[in-house]
Length: 348
Ligand code: KG4
Ligand code: ZN
Image 1 (cartoon, helix red, strand yellow):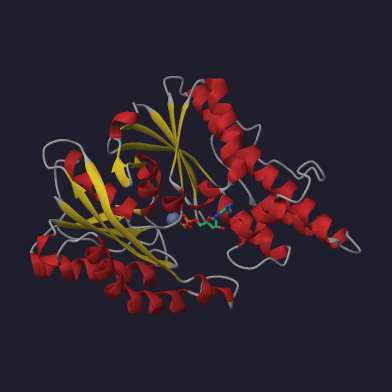
Image 2 (cartoon, rainbow, N blue to C red; image 1 turned 180 degrees about the vertical axis):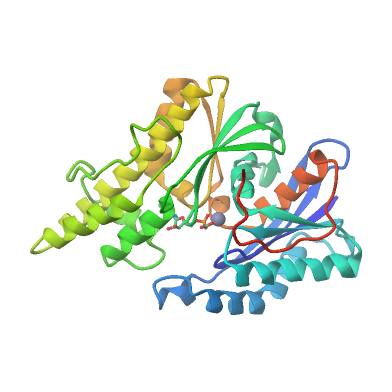
């Protein structure tokens, strides 16, 4: 079964082709193409929805053509289209969803609406093997825990089986990626802030400033990062002069606070759900090296197998969308025929 994945929830236009086995639970990513709008949004220091949607309109058809070409497949041979239906920016989502519906209608094939955060959650199960990205469902057992950390969401989700998810925690305010982005902005770093802040942090001392670690002692699995941004703002306002070293120290100390909270909350959740032996980590912030080191250390100590999305799949991509479409088709028992964009679609 050949599945086209489409992703346009925010500022990346992406398409991918996944070849899934009909009988066995096996799949291979044949191509994954991403057109980033980063340069477009650098000028405004953030995503302007109308600008993003227009760029999606321009890129979507060439990107799909490119994904088909790279996978050496033809449009007419597709068996299904999986498309991000939410959460995200409504006008951006609609470009992908409407394109998917047009393809589905023209070819008479199913259109599967995919939750963007669910796709980030499954993305670590696409592993590089002999030059290919292969779906490796056999590498996990249930229940497993997923930490998904992106620009708009920070979630802890318990996987009780395929298509059997339960969100056990989320951020009360800013997402982890959003905290990186906002603190980067305070430090005058370019958009997108996450990679820039972590680069600057590598030259700083993570113990220089003790920024707050919110929600660390609560016995739920929720997060809060807005206070950290405010603490950084107050700290910066108090300084008369900021040297390059001071800035690096602020970056390193803020990053350490985010990493500490994400790690502690994740392993607190594992301590409560004691049958969990596998941790999946996906989303843009999963590219953060310090976060990975910290999760690796705790995984080792707690005898947990850690699965982190491959670098090409941490940020927004359509490979994870096509994969989630395949999982739905194989494990859901019913295949949706159409999709509608839902900007606020939450995992429950
Ligand atoms: O998953 P993603 O690509 O898009 C959303 O679904 O939001 O996540 C983007 C977020 C941004 O906030 C970006 O700054 C952050 O991921 N990010 C990072 C790093 N790379 C991307 N944050 C920290 N360290 C990084 N290396
Ligand atoms: Zn994302």
